[in-house]
Amino acid sequence: MTYFVDLTPYTYLERHDEDGRGPSDEPLLNVGWLDASHPFPTGAPPGGLMPALTELAKVRVRQTRGHHYCEICIRDLGDDAREAIREGMIARESAEFEVRGDNVAYAAPQLLLHYVDAHGYLPPAKFRAAALRSTS
Ligand SMILES: [Zn+2]
Image (tube, rainbow, N blue to C red; front, side, top):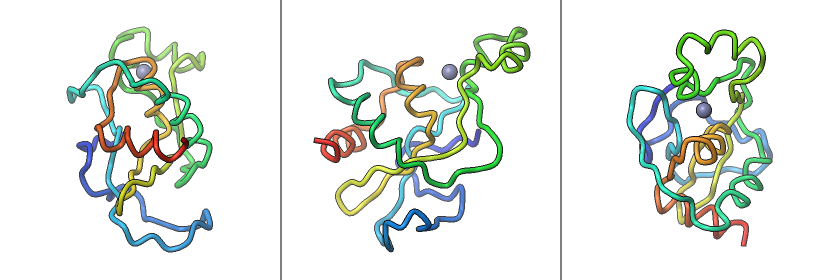
């Protein structure tokens, strides 16, 4: 997958409003675009974050044809990664989801849930707050 630093402007795919949520003029920022070669912040997720993210991720946007595999899992498996991919044992996703903040929106890969759950990734505080607020 493509790596982007958290909270940088989103540039990956053309932005559409095909999901019918109307025009959105607020800036769209990257969150959770991890790869295996860049360190990322880790920590225990605040209570309620995973359920909130699970709910938000149900709205899939910018679906692509191919799959993104978790590069961190692939790195950690080393020589066993190819077989694990063949057997469907590597987390993979093919879309993004968005979280609305204050005059800003965040674009995250669906794999963000796996990064938090399996690799201890701790997304930026503003993103966490927006996710918790949007589902409470
Ligand atoms: Zn992984």
